Image (cartoon, rainbow, N blue to C red; front, top):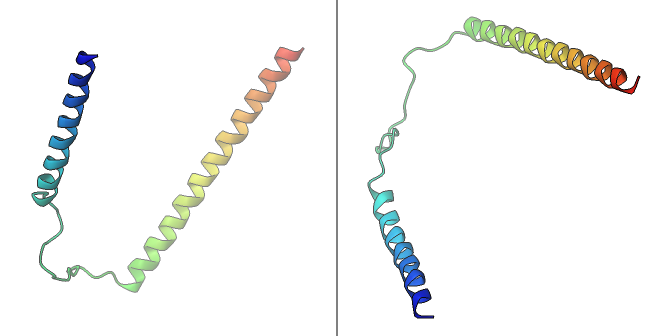
Length: 89
């Protein structure tokens, strides 16, 4: 029974060391956000026409993406159904 205590003691020691390192790690953590309370402003403002163009482009891309998904789903369903019917016959 004496050998069992060594592994538990090592695990407890590792947990304590990890907990101690965690506090130090969080303090020195680097961040991409500025530490000052400055408000970031985009130097390039989009015009309402540009925003409308972006909206229409995104809507078109979404329609194309949904059509691709629908076509792939229908084709895969047909393939699976035909394979299932082939196996049954």
